[in-house]
View 1: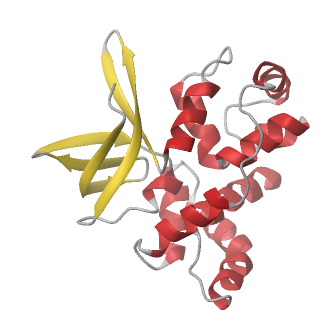
View 2: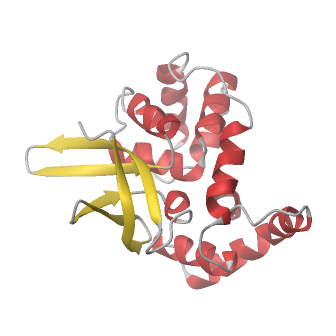
View 3: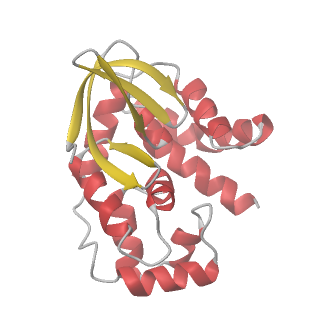
Length: 210
């Protein structure tokens, strides 16, 4: 198993990062929030999970080991493959998923593209007790720190990530506007715009609008 990859970022796409490892470009599937914390030419370390199929080998990458662990645990539920597990982590942080499962928050799971009401109810039953208790705010702080070294401006990053997920430009603009107060508050407090958290908030606002 490939536990992690480390090296300079050679290329980025909305859901794909290419990390140069020993002269070889490793293509790693990532959530847009993970992509937002990377910058071409800079060093990166991604926790990874290798998914083996009869006709393919796919490497999934994560900001930290906690995300990777939750990704693998989610696939223990029936009907959850790597793509849906990654989509769940694209909308919610590991702690948010733990909280949703522990409190039976059906709406939180329905906010994930590809999960309907019945699917959410089934997942809450199957995942109960498997993800553990929320770990607290440490993961959020780490994600904000990672984004601080990422590319700017945050509005372009966020818009590109949403369009990469299949939303129209108009929808992306509306979602960016919806989370602008949150970004401005973070900047005013002396930090930077936390793109991964803003992306999750933008996705939730788009889901409520539908």
